[in-house]
Length: 134
Image (cartoon, rainbow, N blue to C red; front, side, top):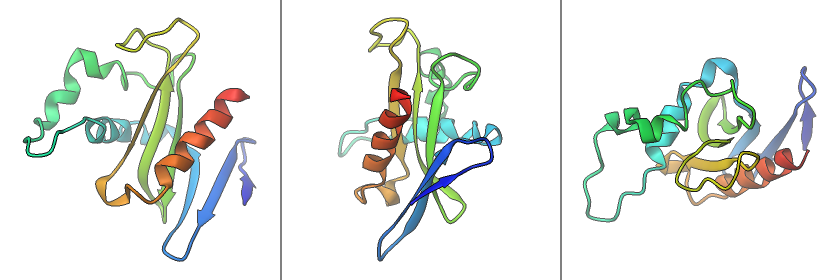
């Protein structure tokens, strides 16, 4: 089901027998959540201790979140499950490790552990790719 929001952006509602969630745009007051999702996106090999949370304050990681929403190419969709944001996918044009050019955004996605493996991340990616095609 597709729902129109006041600002004419599109929100997508999904449900199955276990959950119902909405994929929608990140709200300005939620930007700080990107730091949580950036930390969650860090690959931690099995048997390895996770890094301290302050790792996200390193300059090479802050480029993903600093002043998010202020630059061309900043887009973010979140998965909202009953009013709780449980995952995010965001894009940003930046000179990071995977930099292609100044027109191609980098793509980041993350969900809290307990919401992984349920198809939510796949839907976030599909909706972001649709948004980028506009």
